[in-house]
Image (cartoon, rainbow, N blue to C red):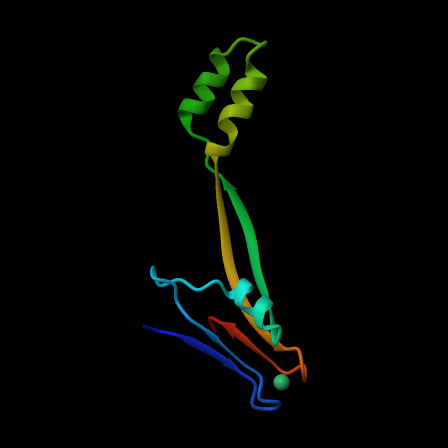
Length: 104
Ligand SMILES: [Zn+2]
């Protein structure tokens, strides 16, 4: 079993993040319950169109009345959407010290 300890050496606040039986840990719930640290998560969303030939071909064959429905039902499959985690920061509520976890 792996646990994560968030500990502030300035003021002694500490929280242990224990895993559930499926090796996950609810950080937000634990921090809220302990009320010693808060976490901020930074991420960036990006998207890239990947219009497939089939989509274009069907656009040209759909009736004018159905084209809006066709696009609304299928457009999301024509876009790759990415979410990239940038960093997670834990800040001590007592003294304000913090640690930023990131992939450098
Ligand atoms: Zn502190």
